[in-house]
Every structure is written in C-alpha cells, then in structure tokens.
Image 1 (cartoon, rainbow, N blue to C red):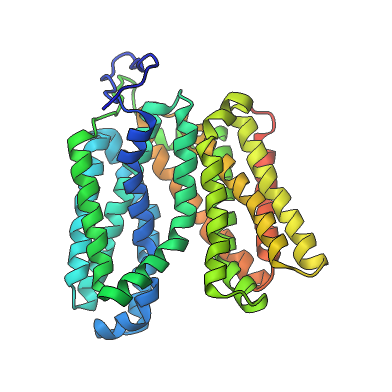
Image 2 (cartoon, rainbow, N blue to C red):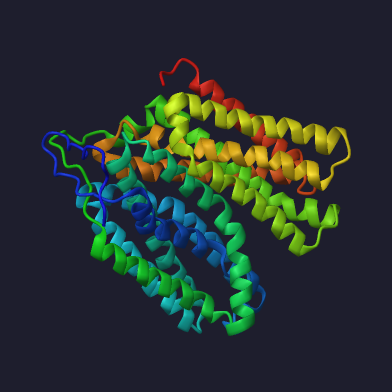
Length: 405
C-alpha cells in the first residue's frame, strides 16, 4: 500500500509512533465500512418490521423496542467504549466491536425468539458504538493536523445522515428477494469482511503520554470549543433528521410525488453532500476551522429562511424545495468537515472519551430538538425544518463569537 508523500507524522514526546501509512483513498477504504455498518444497522430492517412481529411471535411494540434501544445504545454506549479505547487502544476496541456486531447480526438472522432477538440487537448496537468511537478516535489520532481530516469527517458526517434514509430501501429489496433474515446475513457478512480487513491492516494509533488523566470529563465539558463544534455537528445532523422526518409527508402526501420520484429527489441531496464533502480539504485551507464552520451553518440557516418564504409565505413546489435543500446539504457537508476535528482538537491523549461525549451530546440534541420541532410544528409543513435550521445555526454562530480559528 502506498504511503503519503508528505513528511510522516511525528509522535508526541513519550508516545508510541503512529504507524499509519495509507493514502487517503486507502484509509477511507479501511475506515468507511465501520461508519456504514453502524448506520445501516440502525434501520435497514424498517420495511420488514410489520411482519417480523408475526415471524418472532411477539407484539409490534417489542419490535419497535429493538429499533429504539439500538439508537439509544449507539449513542450512550460510546461513553463506555471511548474511555476503553483511551486505556487499551483503538485497535482492540474496533476489532472487538466488529466481532460483536458480526456475531450478533448472524444470531439475529437465525433467531426465532423475540427476547433473544432483543438481546442480540443490544449486542449489535454495542458493537456498532465501539466501531464508531474507535474509528473517529483513530481519525483524530492520525489526521488532527492534516487537511485530509476535513474530507474524512465530512464524508463520515454525510454518510451518518443519508445512509439511514437509503438503508430501508436496500432492506426492502432483500426482503422481497430472499426474506427478512437475509438482511441480517448481509450485515454479518459485511461486518466479517470489514473486521478481517482491519485485523490485517489497521495499526494501533493511540498516543500514550505521561500526562495525568485526572478530571478528563470535567476538562472536556468545560471546553468552549468542544461545545461550539459539537453544537455545529448537532445543527448539521439535526437539519437532516428533521428533513428525513418530514420529507415523505411533504413531497409524497402533500405534493403528490411517486415513491420513485421521491427517491430520486432524495438521492440528489445525498449526491450534493458527497460532492461538497470530497473537496472539504480545501475549505479549511481557505477559511480555517472556525471560518468553515460559520459558513456551513450560515448555509443551513439561509436554507431555513428560504424554505420559510418558499413553503409558508408562498405556495410550496417541488423544484424550489429541492433547490433549497441542496443549499442545506452543502451547509451540512461544510459543517461536518470541521466539527469533529474542532471538538476533539484539544484532547489528543483521551480522544476516545471526547469522541464518545461528542456523539452522545449530538444524539441527545438531535433526537430531542428534532422530535420536539416536528411534534409542535407539524410534520406536513416546512416549519419544523425552518425552526431547527435557524435556531440551531444561530446558537452555533453565537458560540463561535470571540473564539480563535
């Protein structure tokens, strides 16, 4: 595997050398599967939920619980695996997570008991949490001072946003062709391949220092930069969450789009995010972390304001809605390109714990704030999206005031 032509990263004093010699494309090929699997595992089987209760001889509430608990453990589980990755290393946490995810997925494919299914979903979610925190901590270890970090973080952020929306389509196709158990066999196969690849190529990247580790949680939570960039990440992810929650009712029920046309419209927004993510390395060169963050959330806020006029003041139409969502998508990509790096920048020797808290806070803000916006303002109007985009973006902008780049 070819190495970077740039000067190799110098380890901190008292640390182990970081043996990471991959090109950007090779690094993405190694890391992306874990980000994808954690996202896919969340709701790839949504289309088969109605008849799974019959297959497992249980009630629909139990199946719904397997969805809710996965999401809960995916966020809170990182609070456990983050510190573990700081203490024992990224590699063992990653490989342990991949093994748990794969084994649980295979067990889910063979399960015929609702109680066993629920337990296996919890194990699968724990594996996904471990994979996520180890992957992002590795990115922080290796790329914290490199422009490649913006590309990686932006692509990861984009995938975390749109993969859960596309995964149910894949799940529906698998169910039609091979039955619902094939969904979990696919996750098991992909988890095994990713885990074996990582076992072969993924080196340990944890930086071991002599610094005392007392008061880590207090240090993280008292850091204003951490809160600023975590709020920026919450703004980006929440904007997509509210869009995902309201778009079917807006575009299919209200505007009469077919499911195929809706899927194409959705795909166009995902493509915009990926395109802007691909060039994320240039943004930090031009504007720095703070400048990129501000421009990203300004685009999200601008999209919210335009949606207000396009969907509330005037009559909403599909073309205007999609064009405005392209603006929001560009803002999401820009914002995600710097939020993880900015939030974790000060915590090199305990990036695992900082990563876990970063994701836990984002999950809480998005799930609570996004759900409240949809419930209070109605899921068949643009108002929830307008409110979330504008309010969360304004809060992020206020937090950036007075901070250095």
